[in-house]
Length: 291
Ligand SMILES: NC(=O)c1ccc[n+]([C@@H]2O[C@H](COP(=O)([O-])OP(=O)(O)OC[C@H]3O[C@@H](n4cnc5c(N)ncnc54)[C@H](OP(=O)(O)O)[C@@H]3O)[C@@H](O)[C@H]2O)c1
View 1 (tube, rainbow, N blue to C red):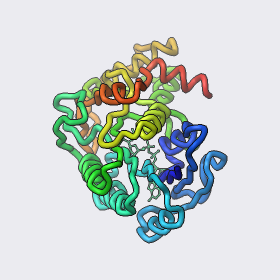
View 2 (view 1 turned 30 degrees about the vertical axis):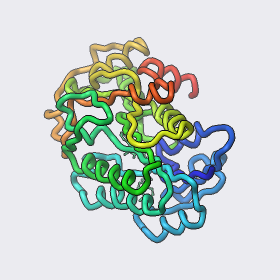
View 3 (view 1 turned 180 degrees about the horizontal axis):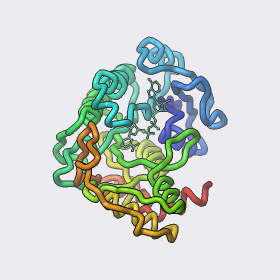
């Protein structure tokens, strides 16, 4: 089977390449960068700005993939709020163009499709996005599922991990700040599931390998507040928890509203694949052992 990974240089994109099955798949990639982050893990690479529809469509036509995995997105939710046209273009319209190729897709969505009144959420709970990011992602889900019944939507949240050129992760930020004796202010009112990008990638390959389609939640197995996550990181590294100060989301005056009591249930993923993503301690152990 041939798969085209769109956004192959991003955090999830790199993890999809690293966790690709040993046999049976040919993996090609598209990224906006001139050169791929992980050339050895790709059969071919093209630099494509996916907002240029004809460039995207000709890459898909040339390679004729059996599957399109889309991990490209604008993930800065405050940027999406300030620039809704950009959010709509990248997070919705480009997804519609990919779906129109008529191939089954794996597309990544988010807990931001929910309003955070009553998480953690199951796949069939009612959606009600609070932000431009959440709205465009929900619209992209609908485009993908209406184009091909074989497509898979993997909803995830608070991704972290290592990747070439990746942003500093929350875990690294908290650990490095506390190690340097600096205080950090962390919100106590945002709840969810910290998720290792590698586990999301493994979950996706397992779902595809098991011919699953529709919506699946793929997140870490621990549900906590951001503040509790930071405390867990301090505990793990034996650092001073007294340096972690609490604050509320409203104090941050961010452009995009966040779903507060969020989080995603993974019962369906575990039932259908037998795969249970790691908890926070397991994630840190995994990342540190691979470093
Ligand atoms: N990160 C999270 O916490 C989180 C939470 C929930 C859902 N998700 C979803 O998970 C998926 C993967 O996220 P991620 O964390 O891996 O994001 P990421 O590291 O930011 O990767 C996204 C990739 O998309 C690329 N991209 C953006 N605009 C492009 C364009 N016009 N043409 C070609 N490529 C373009 C980016 O390139 P540049 O970096 O060079 O711009 C980047 O490589 C996304 O669908 C995201 O919405 C993420």
